[in-house]
Length: 119
Image 1 (spheres, helix red, strand yellow):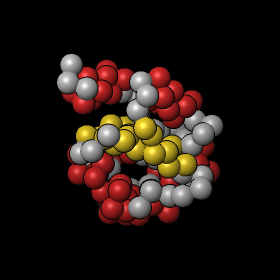
Image 2 (cartoon, rainbow, N blue to C red):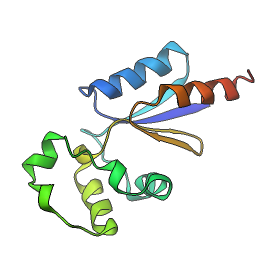
Image 3 (cartoon, rainbow, N blue to C red):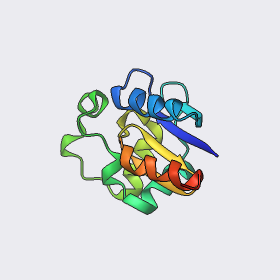
Image 4 (tube, one colour):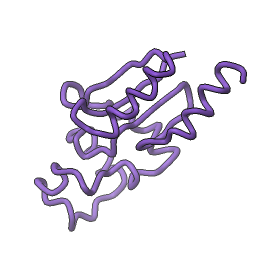
């Protein structure tokens, strides 16, 4: 099984997630948001499970640069904004098959690995 991680190399939590998976010898497909934005379809999976709000990193530098603090967008508009501006996303976004997490969720990831290895 392969895990997919969306984030940026410079983001501390993304590096922590990548280290977690490499320590457990799990193959990682890393999507660097500086090089390639997540598609609307990929983000839609996270929206269906968590909603749009948890995907928005309100502490992100890009959020402040765009002056989004007072924005009152619809969920569809926010989703399009996240596709257009991937650095607004909470990092890392992690997907293992149909299982998803936002941010660092080591306890949940450990469960995934244990289930996959039959422990």
